[in-house]
Image 1 (cartoon, helix red, strand yellow):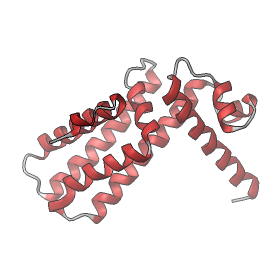
Image 2: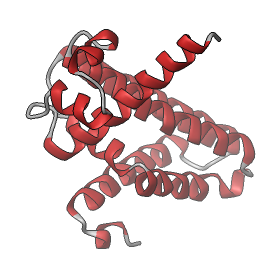
Image 3: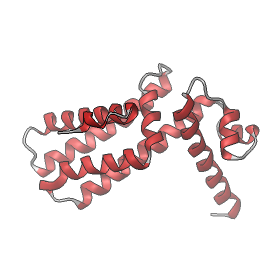
Image 4: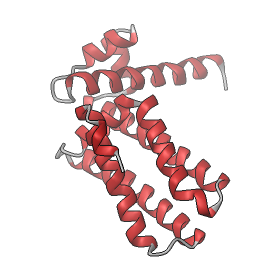
Length: 173
């Protein structure tokens, strides 16, 4: 990869990181690309070099956050014994929540945004996670794999609410 290509990839990642922070802090609808540019220490036109609309910027941010979850789960599934799979996936998601809090808040917001491309991105992310976890549970011989997958996903959503509201007691048990 040429140096300019590497710089370009890094700048795009920096813009996405800034967007995740700004969207999580002020909300997608209140956020501006000017705020994202300021957070990334670049000019607003430079944001538009990579993302022609704020919606495309949100989609890039969602793709980054879903990729993190999916890759993290993939690594757990590849390395974990069947009897520890569910508990390890839960722990990994809790780690993601702790380390990438703003990405979780971003996904929570995106669940309520009605623009079709954003809804599709969220549906694709949830579908991929569900299919991955279900296949792993089935391969591991987890009893009632469909039900355990649904409960795993439900627990993750409840944990998101607990984190967003600063109510850790919702995650006990």
